[in-house]
Amino acid sequence: MRTITAFIRPQQCDQVKLVLVQLGIIDITLSDVKGFGRQQGSLQQYRGSDAEIRLHRKLKVEVKVDEEMVAPVVEKITFAARTGQVGDGKIFVSPLQKVVQVRTGEERVELA
Image 1 (cartoon, rainbow, N blue to C red):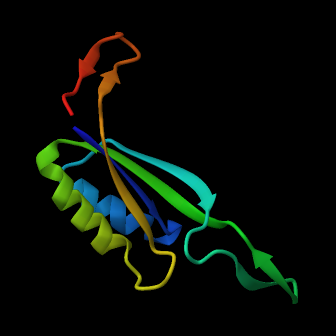
Image 2 (image 1 turned 45 degrees about the vertical axis):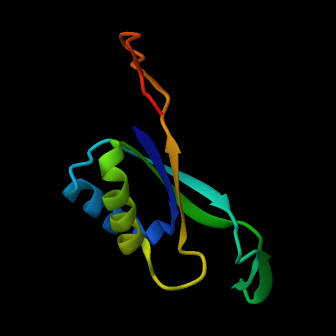
Image 3 (image 1 turned 30 degrees about the vertical axis):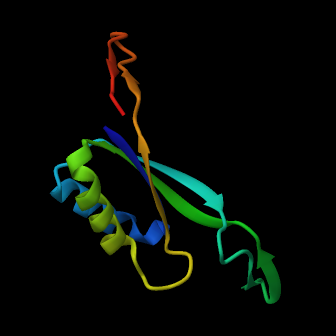
């Protein structure tokens, strides 16, 4: 199994959730995060004066999928999250080594 973590613009959330559900993915974790990448800071107007925004609000989307679903999930997230502007986000794919069910203590070890 793999963990797919995507950092996207918050306004793209509905589109990304829709494509994931269409792929049959029902376990989705969403978190509000702040950060920056290539865009660094930006100059914006706040109450009539210029203010430099160093951290940008993003949405962190996490899903766990089988190996064969990685490519279609990454493709669909990329399509749904893209606006064509700097700051659209990033997608990371990582191996998932172990899953523990909190309620039962049942462990599922994944082969990487």
